[in-house]
Image 1 (spheres, rainbow, N blue to C red):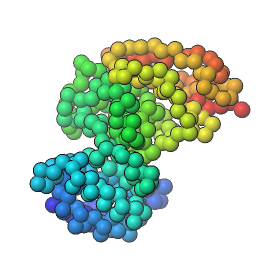
Image 2: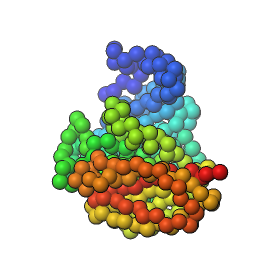
Image 3: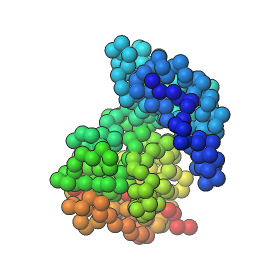
Image 4: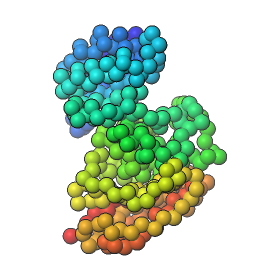
Length: 317
């Protein structure tokens, strides 16, 4: 029975919002309902107003629990509730990211504040289950992502091979390589991207943090280069003048030839984040490089077992 307008005694929301604003950071609130819909709906309007009164205009909702009276999330009871949440958030001019949601049905065309949603076996499952294998990541673009943006919460810094993976709820570990995690930010469309790991872990991985921070969340164009469901894919996306290229593979190492005939300018600086030479046995191993490529060139997207490959291509003018 959560109270959505009463912080813990040691949590000064006004000071946190003030400090964040000083640093150019916007706070995102979290309403975890635990599935207690009547309790949340009694407070929902007031709780969202409370957030906006404190300068918070982004809201993540959660429903990690059973709905009352045996109702399912996708029941009429659940569908009506999610609709009320979207409309209430719109009245308070709040952007919404729904976790444990119903499937995307195109409602964001009418209610564009419905920015993104989870609705898949997300990254968090690595904390308490046998984990999400890389093949799962190569399956989702052909299943869940067909319905709309997905907040998978990628970006895990603790990476493991299939042999090294173990369940650790306190310090979650992801299956596959760190380059695989970087590639997810290009492959998975979500106009609001969450991060999987703790801030301290990104301080320990500055090159990774810097690279993913430069990947946009909206796209002007998308090119599917090659793909086989659950096995491998290479995709190119455009934002402004830049192109972003990424590849994913399952537990099989691969080298895929990609022809850069989708580029418009003659020459590009290509900044690559890829698997290191030891990524097959040490999943956190990665390599960065910078090369000059031309329109029409052929390059090799080489990935380790459970690996990935990502690049930012900036035109040279």
